Each structure stands twice: as structure tokens, then as C-alpha cells.
Length: 398
Image (cartoon, rainbow, N blue to C red; front, side):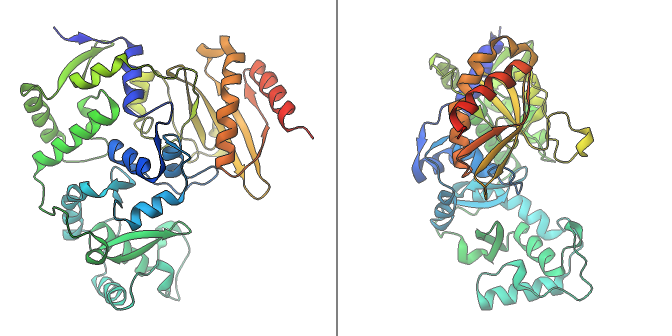
């Protein structure tokens, strides 16, 4: 008979494994430790508040600084590539990117290949050193737009995804490209992994970083791996490397050592404002299943279709996801604007406690966004708006 976990235990295990809610890592070495533990940190360009990769790390690393990523790239401790999306990954996992690169090299990425342009791009980088897309002259008939990238930009991305180029750094969030052989450290194992090895890697990483998973979680936005993952799960169960538990009448995979961590206390009063691309929340179906939190990012919707706001941040409190906050950091004026904050209906009986727990984390996050002042435009329920407005007025009134 399978062990059964309560939903509270399952959520606790997920939070502990995600290194939340209280940051326990510190410094550059701690930043590397978080990336190694989670397996990846998603990169995203949206900057209405701190970009996703910095936000995700800030939540887990005490006194995190944005240049820690640059340092780790320079030290060749991490690299930029594709996980389920653009991401920073531990350099020791580099070989697990080789199969995708080989597949793209043999075919194409998002657009038709122009091998003549690719050859010209490689020749220039080989001769001149690292270059950005802007270093290549755009054609006269160039039309602006995401899907009308100039040919050199397309070639750079194709070569990057195929593994012939790497991104040793970004300048102003724009990639710098260089030859892989000039960026990659010499000590790495570069043998092509088998499908079974890739599956084992995804299983180990997924269970370690999430605490308990289902097979569907492990193949999130990845194609062609489902069968291998199922085979390796069965093998790891037979070898006692994994075990099954029941949560809400569904089977999950975990390990004995992870279950032992359920005795570890978590800081229930600590609030965390999460990025929409945080590792805890990026798989929306899993989030709904485990935390009963129906979440989606609304920046891609027309304004009149949004329920919570352009870029609503999920909020953790008392071991649950209890609210979401749409905010904007106006860095030039130093003002952090809470455009809307909505407390879930089942948590609205404890508005005052939530509000007072929120303030310290809110101020810390606003300061990370270089905004020493906070203003509130809207909050739900009305009692939250009254309470939060009162606290903010006391702190920030002239």
C-alpha cells in the first residue's frame, strides 16, 4: 500500500524542495547553488518589475545582486541555452543540451536557414571576436518586427541553438555571441547522452527540485521523451531510487530522503512575491493540482480581457499561494506602483495578518527594483485596500 501525504504535506515538500519561502543561500556561490539545485533559471525579457531570472534568484539568495549572473558566466560555472525555454543552466549539465543542438543543426530552429549568411556570421566572429546582432548591417528592405529579424540575427540564433555559438554574456539584455570552442571550459564531458540518460537526468532533477512529481511534469514542453521517461521511472522504482506516494488520490514520485525533510519547519509567516516564470509556478497545471491556484500570465491578453493585470505576481504565505499582485517599478522616479493586489477569497478572513506580513517583503522587493517609495492603486477585498493604504500612508507620507 502506498504512503499517503496530506495536501499540506505535499505543498510543504514542494516549497522545501524549491528553497522557499525563506532564502537560505548567499552570495555568488549561493546563486550557483540555487541554479544547480533547481536545474535551470528561466530568462525573460519583461521588465515592468525585475526580470524573471533575477527575481527568481533574489527570492532564494540573501543579498542577491544582478551582476552575480555575469560573474558566474565569466567563471564558466553556468551557460545560457534552452531548457523548456531560454534559461541559465549549470555548466556540468552541458552535455544534456547536445541532443537538442544536434537535432537543430541537422534541421532548423524557428525559420528557414540561410547557410551563406551563417557562414559569413561565423567568419566574422572567428576573425573579430564576440559580436552582437547590432554589429551586422541590416538590409535596406528590413522591416521592424519580432518575426522579421534581419538575416544575420536569424543566423546568429540558428547557430546558437545548434551549438556552434554560445552567449558568454549579455549587454543591456542583448546577447553577445562567440564561438563555442572559445567559451566552453576544457574539462567538460561532451559525450552525447542516450535517451535513457536524458530521461534519468530530467527525473532526478525534477524530483530533487520539486519534491514530488508526476511523469507529465518531467516532460513539460519537451517532445519525444515521454516513453523514455516512463521506462526510466519504472527502472528507478524497481531499484528503490524512487518511491510512489498518494496525494488527493493521485500518484506522485518522490524519494525517502525527500520525505524525511517533512520534519523540517518552514517559515509560514514569510511572504514571497514570485515571478510568473518562477520554477515553482511555471507549470500551471501542476500548480492547480497541488496548490489549487488557477494562474496564468495575462500580459499577452488585450487589456480589457485581463482579470488581475498585465504581470501579476503569485504570492506565497502560510505554505500556500494566497494572492497575486500586478505591479510596476518606475525606476526613474523611484516609485513602486501596486496597480492591483487580489487576495484569494478563501484567505480573506485574515486580511490584517496578511497585510502586516506583506509589508516587509514588499519594501524589500521594491528596493531591489530601485524604488524606495510604494504607492497602492487598487486592492481586493476592500478591507485589504483600507488596511494596506493605511500602512503605506504612515510609511511614505511627507
